[in-house]
Length: 102
Image 1 (tube, rainbow, N blue to C red):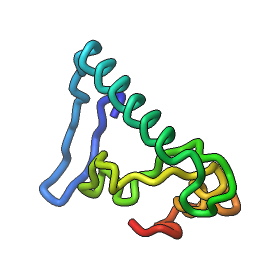
Image 2 (tube, rainbow, N blue to C red; image 1 turned 180 degrees about the vertical axis):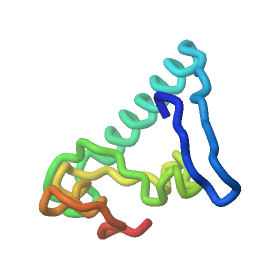
Image 3 (cartoon, rainbow, N blue to C red; image 1 turned 30 degrees about the horizontal axis):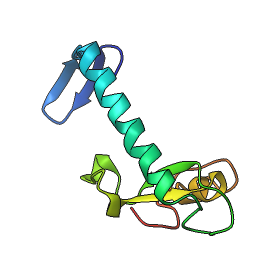
């Protein structure tokens, strides 16, 4: 959340203000994620769905927002086409569970 947000919930109106993140901690988290991504793509250079194209994306099988982790068994190397299909964007529109679950 980038800006303050006003929502109407069951308990009444709520006003949420975004918390400021420590820029140094954010940078460290970003580069740690990039290192994990690069390491995974190096170990699995081909798309794990079609096994024909080079993988350029690392897909979380169970999303982080649903309690997934960055553990290697929750990651999947995918090409652009398969990654879009995994998120339900086969025709460039829509969003859904996709082919690989969650």
